[in-house]
Image 1 (cartoon, rainbow, N blue to C red):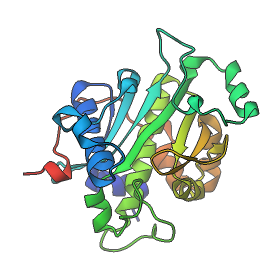
Image 2: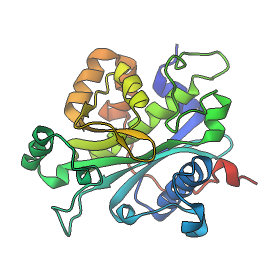
Image 3: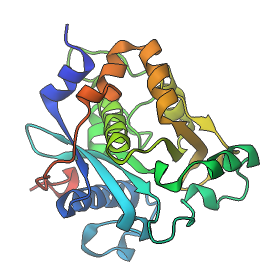
Image 4: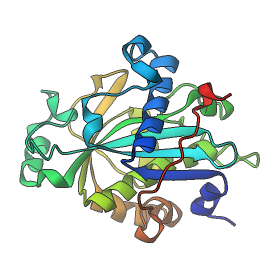
Length: 256
């Protein structure tokens, strides 16, 4: 029986890095998901069909594409600390209701060891095939089971993005990650041993989001005891990937 890593590699390709073609692939897919599919942003505010902001200048990207039709289907980014202004806040840190205990804990962590998961999304065209139109992240509770037609691929995509997250953390020596996550996504990935710690109440930030914090070392240890298959896929260092030269594929809605 194939493990998650082999199943994923049979169909999908994961790439991480900061190159211009990979950042463009990320921004184009963000534009599709956040501007066209969900109306979180006004599409007319962005040129060349790319959603971007001030954090892209210090971000690293992960993009999942289909190996056979070369369509980009999922992406996320990790925002790094500002090297020129080390004390500049991450997006999550700008919310005033964060619990002081959790916020102050990171004051003792070097800023270069901290990042933030941002713009985590799976294209609706792919989620539609899997019956997962309700969320941007690609998994809905009760539907992440195996299916002979390959419809468990949507859970592989989401876990594949987390594989990209762990790969980036390894490359940049990140120890802690902030995130604003959909509560449903947090509940589901917790099943796989990836435990985020809530650090404040849910906020309305382009939908209901939970401010949270992930300890990379704790997540690795928890995943190892929860599911060896998931651990080998998203956490084991020998299976993580280094930055690659990305060939810019089309997003699903721009395919010709």
